[in-house]
Amino acid sequence: MGIDTRLLRSNFIIKLKSWEYWPFGIVQAPAIIYWLWLSLKARSLFFFSASNPGILAGGMFGESKFSVLKKVPADCQPKSILIQYPTTTEEVIRKLKNEEFSFPLIFKPDLGERGWMVKKIETEEDVQRYVARAKWDFIVQDYVSLPLEFSVYYARHPEEENGRVTSITKKEMLSVKGDGKRTLQELILNKDRAKLQWEALKNTFAHQLKTVPPLGEEIELVPIGNHCLGTMFLDQNHLITEKLSTSFDHISKHVDGFYFGRYDLRTASEQDLEEGRIMVMELNGCGAEPSHIYQPGASIFKAVSHLLTHWHTIYQISIANHNKGVSYLSWKEGKQVYKRFKTVTTS
Image 1: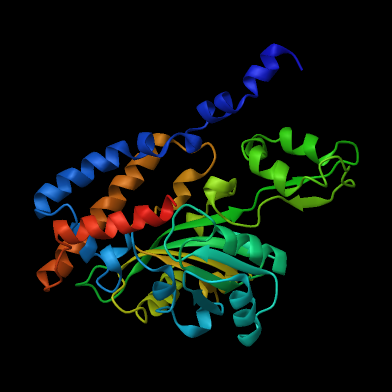
Image 2: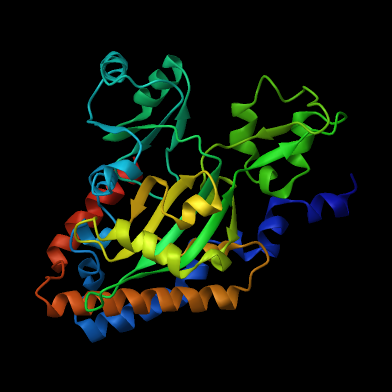
């Protein structure tokens, strides 16, 4: 490989060419400025906390993911338990047996963001490794094996009877396909999206890197559907129908104090999605992005436009709830919640 090719395939150039990889602050800068303007209008930096009265800080940060998930109708959520820190491997394994969990499982922090420390756990040794790192409460959840994973954004104005779905994203897990010639390492390094995850993947697949996958064999590299971990986000807003909005409206009205946020879910088919036959792995409040904006090749200007609309909707819902008597977080309360959140996520 010549120096020109190496340069063009460097991680820096790969990221430079696609804004979806740019630092969070660059893409979000216009939205941050708009948030400050809306804060002046609302006379509160934490006005967004009123968007979802049933979720701490409206779901912007600091909320317990476990407590929010438990608000979702029982037939739409996988079995989950909360493990409180401190704990031991022996205690966790005992709880798994008592609750009749079976591998594989998903372990993830009760406070977290952007896929941080979300792991697929397949053995007791995996449990041991996770517990050794976990200095915080974490969730144990059944691994949902349904074939399709989506993020669905929902919004309902407090003065309107019905809400609507505003964004749908399909998630394609990071994978490579064997050609019967190249090693797994070569396949990973030849795919831009996988190459960016090389530092993690070379450890995960340390004993398989020199093997040659058969022609046509697809190897899933990361089982967690998060953009930061290499998942491809695909705009599926064409799937939004009146029936789909009605289905999610029905589910959302059973979630106490919820008006605006994103369902991260799995389902068996697009028809099941439309009819609300879903398993919700996580429900996020106003802090979640409308993730369809990360469609590869999408315009950054359209993405910024969607983010500004997103914040405008947060503002409208928050003001309406505030006028109905919902208080904003005070400056002191907001700082305390944020400080606790950052303490956990940087540990």
